[in-house]
Image (cartoon, rainbow, N blue to C red; front, side, top):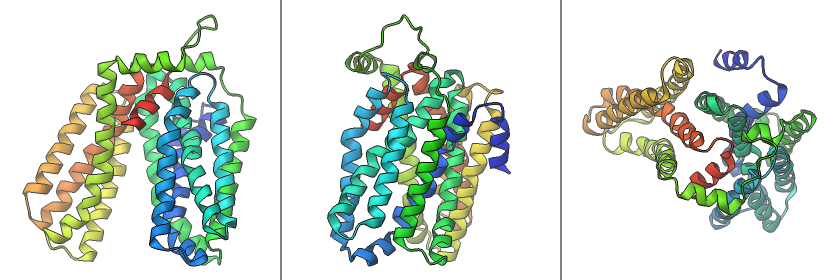
Length: 352
């Protein structure tokens, strides 16, 4: 229902935009393979816990070192080639991971996944923002909603693949095929000229990487939005990660009750994003941000200070309802500070 409504909103746009806006969904769907399918990988190669930790550490380090540079350079021209390169890089990484019979090739595959994923996925979102700079909040809201659907579907996809008799290698080959198909779609569609994305005329000289970076670092308002973007991500990925432990240790909830409460929290996030998408265009983003922040604050305070088990799902529902809209609203404000320089914005946010 929600997915169909979003696609109906996009029926007048090109196949390219439909492909790009679904990149987040595909990324969340496939990234679950490497986490949920981790026991299959461990059993296939006989990995130790130390080796598994090293694999993900190398992937994180490669992203930390290369992603900002990729983002900055992507503003120099059309993002088409960066996105294509990222998609092909992800396909190669999954092919290597699926065919690896030793630890070193597997390590190389995961090291490639990080920056390739940034180029394919993050720059797809950036290209969408550049093409419709006045509608960035709605674009990011739809992107986040579709990504949440992909995250929700990932365990079912892994279960189906394993039930069909395919193991780790099969999952990797399926992932590689998906990225190759998206690369074909992007390759076959005409990308708007870089000037259209950047909002510049053809006679305007391109901004150098260092000059663009200096411009960003001098913009205090932009830096504040970038910091707020990181904080909203921490609230979603760090604070809520401790919710289960808090429910168990402080409120002494049983495992089935915790499962129900977490399901309520996830449902609230979907509802919050859906409501946010409907309200954009009717209510100004700053006012929506105030409402979402207030709901989030009320939910956090209620969850932490009202230590009653039956009240916890109510507080988490309110928290997630408001928190779901914070990331799209805050990040869109950061993008709006420098229209057409989305790669630079991504580099700053990722570097914080």
